Image (cartoon, rainbow, N blue to C red; front, side):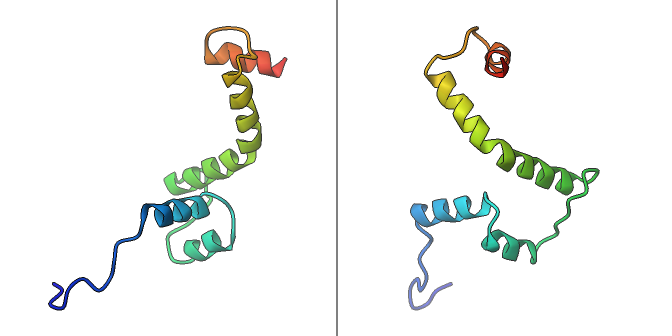
Length: 90
Protein backbone atom coordinates (compact mmCIF):
# COMPACT_ATOMS: atom_id res chain seq x y z
CA UNK A 1 0.00 0.00 0.00
CA UNK A 2 1.26 3.43 -0.91
CA UNK A 3 -0.74 6.06 1.00
CA UNK A 4 1.21 8.91 -0.62
CA UNK A 5 1.19 7.47 -4.14
CA UNK A 6 3.67 5.32 -5.96
CA UNK A 7 7.20 6.32 -4.92
CA UNK A 8 9.01 3.94 -7.26
CA UNK A 9 8.45 3.26 -10.93
CA UNK A 10 8.79 -0.09 -12.60
CA UNK A 11 11.93 -0.55 -14.73
CA UNK A 12 11.67 0.33 -18.39
CA UNK A 13 11.88 -2.28 -21.13
CA UNK A 14 15.24 -0.80 -22.14
CA UNK A 15 16.63 -1.28 -18.62
CA UNK A 16 15.34 -4.88 -18.53
CA UNK A 17 17.07 -5.53 -21.87
CA UNK A 18 20.34 -4.08 -20.59
CA UNK A 19 20.14 -6.21 -17.46
CA UNK A 20 19.40 -9.34 -19.48
CA UNK A 21 22.41 -8.70 -21.71
CA UNK A 22 24.65 -8.06 -18.71
CA UNK A 23 23.64 -11.39 -17.14
CA UNK A 24 24.24 -13.31 -20.38
CA UNK A 25 27.99 -12.65 -20.59
CA UNK A 26 30.93 -13.15 -18.28
CA UNK A 27 31.67 -9.88 -16.53
CA UNK A 28 32.17 -8.48 -13.00
CA UNK A 29 28.43 -7.80 -12.64
CA UNK A 30 27.59 -11.47 -13.21
CA UNK A 31 30.35 -12.55 -10.82
CA UNK A 32 28.89 -10.25 -8.15
CA UNK A 33 25.41 -11.72 -8.65
CA UNK A 34 26.76 -15.27 -8.30
CA UNK A 35 27.92 -14.47 -4.77
CA UNK A 36 24.31 -14.07 -3.64
CA UNK A 37 22.77 -17.22 -5.14
CA UNK A 38 23.40 -20.95 -5.08
CA UNK A 39 26.00 -21.59 -7.74
CA UNK A 40 28.07 -24.59 -8.78
CA UNK A 41 29.71 -26.08 -11.85
CA UNK A 42 29.19 -29.76 -11.05
CA UNK A 43 28.03 -31.41 -14.31
CA UNK A 44 26.10 -34.01 -12.29
CA UNK A 45 23.94 -31.33 -10.67
CA UNK A 46 21.10 -29.61 -12.54
CA UNK A 47 22.43 -26.12 -11.76
CA UNK A 48 25.95 -27.15 -12.69
CA UNK A 49 24.71 -28.53 -16.00
CA UNK A 50 23.00 -25.22 -16.70
CA UNK A 51 26.20 -23.28 -15.99
CA UNK A 52 28.29 -25.67 -18.10
CA UNK A 53 25.81 -25.32 -20.97
CA UNK A 54 25.90 -21.54 -20.60
CA UNK A 55 29.70 -21.44 -20.70
CA UNK A 56 29.73 -23.75 -23.75
CA UNK A 57 27.21 -21.49 -25.50
CA UNK A 58 29.42 -18.47 -24.82
CA UNK A 59 32.39 -20.28 -26.37
CA UNK A 60 30.58 -21.18 -29.59
CA UNK A 61 28.62 -17.94 -29.97
CA UNK A 62 30.99 -16.30 -32.53
CA UNK A 63 31.01 -19.46 -34.66
CA UNK A 64 27.23 -19.87 -34.33
CA UNK A 65 26.68 -16.26 -35.43
CA UNK A 66 28.90 -16.82 -38.46
CA UNK A 67 27.03 -20.04 -39.30
CA UNK A 68 23.59 -18.39 -39.02
CA UNK A 69 24.66 -15.49 -41.26
CA UNK A 70 25.91 -17.91 -43.92
CA UNK A 71 22.73 -19.98 -43.56
CA UNK A 72 20.50 -16.92 -44.01
CA UNK A 73 22.39 -16.07 -47.21
CA UNK A 74 21.69 -19.55 -48.58
CA UNK A 75 25.34 -20.59 -48.70
CA UNK A 76 24.70 -24.21 -47.68
CA UNK A 77 23.45 -27.17 -49.68
CA UNK A 78 20.53 -29.24 -48.46
CA UNK A 79 17.19 -28.45 -46.89
CA UNK A 80 17.68 -29.39 -43.24
CA UNK A 81 19.86 -28.29 -40.36
CA UNK A 82 21.99 -31.46 -40.36
CA UNK A 83 22.95 -31.06 -44.00
CA UNK A 84 23.80 -27.40 -43.40
CA UNK A 85 26.09 -28.38 -40.53
CA UNK A 86 27.73 -31.07 -42.64
CA UNK A 87 28.28 -28.62 -45.50
CA UNK A 88 29.72 -26.03 -43.08
CA UNK A 89 32.15 -28.61 -41.68
CA UNK A 90 33.38 -29.44 -45.16
